[in-house]
Length: 415
Image 1: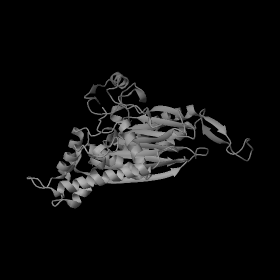
Image 2: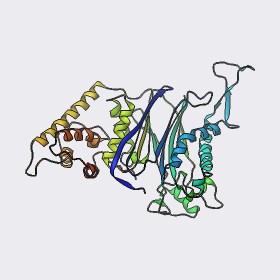
Image 3: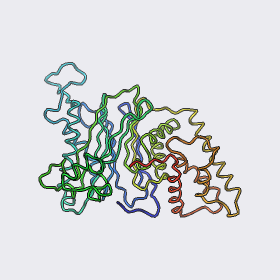
């Protein structure tokens, strides 16, 4: 389940990059959790001849510790590449030439089917490899991790998922594809768990683990007579391949369940699209996603990777103007409320947020984000003008999250 802090840690880890015709940004934040157990991978150009124009991105949501997530973030890709380029999974071609000479080695490029098989094999191999680590083998470390990723070739998307982190593809201004969450209550997952002698209670494996597929978690992978994909918890990823359509593909989002717990696929994509129309700083966009989810009530670690494709939404002068007008309106309303104390005195931040949530004259809020996406703007003005600025911020943060959640301001909890 994980323990919680008295106050969320809001410092963020950020990164961004550009290459192979794509741009990416990422943000991760510890939030309310006692430990940061998320990890990620971002690789533009794979360290293999013939695959420098491929890219790989992944998010790992660790639980019961961070060891498995951190190890996978560094080594899962190499296991996938090795398996994809194994015997029988190659097609040979020579880059920049139509013929092969004795002096020029052929460049080996994996076929589509080899990549799909290699992803599956790579997951199984790294899971088996980590089992040999002494602290994981002797039970001193019981950590596990979900993994969601995308491998991009010049022509294809290869989506992979193991657990309940999720990837979505935004194409032609709508959610075109989403990976499938692996939850114990899903019929197929429940059947495997029961066949392995386990049970599903309170939507958890044996009443404990909330995901039915993961890397690590070896306490759930020791049923005698069952193969690795037949255990209570399976390391097998679900792999989906899609042909890229450059004129329609806009962006891909990878995120852990700390994001999806409070944002639906459509809400998150709509919000990201609206932010991309205001700023082309991908780190800033990802930070806004993480902050918005915190203010919507997420209590988990949060990580998001945004991969922007050539047809990604562009900054719009009209959108920038509307966003500035909204910020100005919010600032003026906060100033107005603070300048007119009631019989109870100057309103606290919770009261200010509650009043704004029922303001019928409010300009349009960012789709999918709602008032939660503007809380930092509101709080900054409040702290600047309030004569009794709150120093602790703990109870206020918790109460605001509850208010925003209960009012359903663009809040949609994914089961």
